Image (cartoon, rainbow, N blue to C red; front, side, top):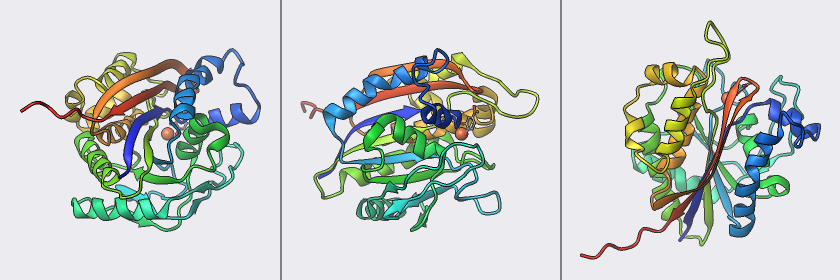
Length: 285
Ligand code: DHB
Ligand code: FE
């Protein structure tokens, strides 16, 4: 049976792609951000996951406002990146795991989630940058299942719905018959807003609350409705929905091994987390 060994979260600002291309990892502006990946990368090197489920939001590359799935799951053998208009390099294709994809899709539909199934799907910076940040040289070799959540066009799914989606993904992975070690990645956030009167908005207190809730009282986040979430996190900070879905997939005992919080990266409060998912010990009767 497959096991979920951990959850990872990271922000996904396009400018990171430019910094990687220019080799600016040790630049004073970028070092506090890139250094935050050393501990998760060491953990990934030591624990060697066989596959990654990547929960993120598309920003107009694969889906546009005319057709916007609330949830979509990739089921392709590979996933191409393409020019998103940010001027960052187009990445080599990433690998899919179609068997794991279809198992997750079947389990989700059986659990009354009805995702769009994508046998071809472009992946944008919200998928490609966290993959490269966490897996470095192996990013294009590790088999993945991309899961897309609509954080862009209202009505957005609620945080509780995203958490339940994550739980269903977790149950799907744990019922997969292959002996795989799987990590689940949630990308985006933390607080940021790119447009309007509140452009540049950041809410450090709410970001800390979200990070603490990953191992604390996750339920305390789940009743925040999407409009309240825009107020608290900013109109793009709602991407923390992907973190909540990732956290939902961790069905064991969840331990925080690492966090990094730094701002700003471009307009965004950057958060990085590594959560270990330990098997639940059988409780005495
Ligand atoms: C920025 C942040 C994002 O989440 C994104 O998708 C695009 C841009 C930014 O802060 O520049
Ligand atoms: Fe984004």
